[in-house]
Length: 277
Image: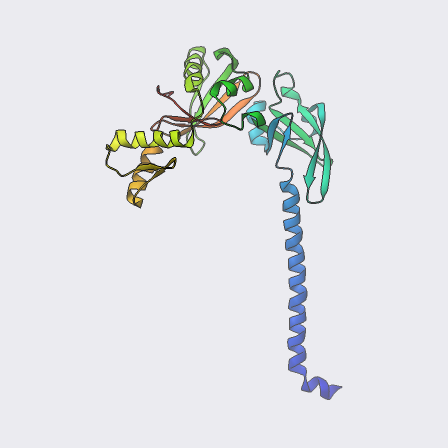
């Protein structure tokens, strides 16, 4: 036996190393697969539809935009039970109870925040849209869905730059009435071709009809990178995000205001004639 071990020592060491490496790989792969499986499972809980509205998982800082201050997300915030939903996951359907958020329970519109109880913990979800507004809604349909019937329905309008820094906040009645008047004039959602033309018009107004930008099949095209960068710099000038906060608790967050092409993105893309800000 000793002679055998001496003769095949190198082979045995190599074999042992291969086996050890194989075991290590199996353990690592098991850990990776478990992590992937867990991530896929958690992904199932990032969003859901309830009562025709889209809800997305949010953290305490986002919830604070609705609650007025940052609070711990937990059972203490659970108000009346709204019902249950069945969440399809990689491990089968999971039934979860839904609760209204106590501070917003009397808002009088669709719940702006919903709490989902997964048994081991409670998560907060923000209302981010309505299913029936998916197909090119007019701005009047958007207003009706969010309870915007006149300026008095709006509590505040906040403007941020693209990095999230607040630039302005409008809360007085005169400013809100002016905003409302311009907002409801946005009218119908633009087609892709119409939106592309808005960008082309902005470029032409700035640089003339130099042939640098063209519209093909509803998309703006540039002949070279230099022209493309010039156009992008123009179109992104002054772009900001707008949050519209309603008194009923709902919010239209992260609307995009682009002053150069004169486009306002809410659910769809809308063109305006008179500057908002």
